[in-house]
Length: 160
Figure (tube, rainbow, N blue to C red):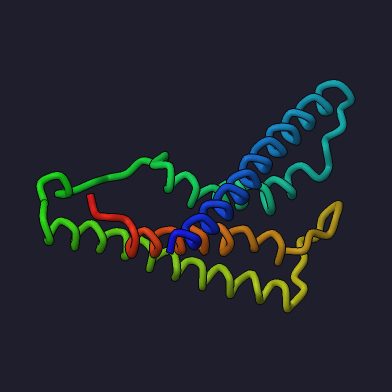
């Protein structure tokens, strides 16, 4: 399963770059909007919709798996240091498995929502007509990859 781990790691790294790029674009758009309003009294018309619909979901979900892999998120551990042996391994793997199942459910539900938006051709009307299927696609993508990571870790990593 080592090759699966390498493929998963490359996928996580690629999505993480996408999430970081989304953050940079958010910062550029918001600052450009501020400057344009101050200097010319004209807002950047696409800033709000693009940030709200596309960039924030990408920013929030695409890096989930990479940051989890690196141990970068806040984690609440209970009883793990006190538990050792077989019972400790079962509890540790069970926690990881439950989180994986949760993210599988989020992936399924958000993927269904995105697919319906694609099939119906849903659009957010504004200065530009924004197709909503693409706006929703980042959530099942990011949650799907963290589901894979959690399930992979359940099967692969020795329990702490």
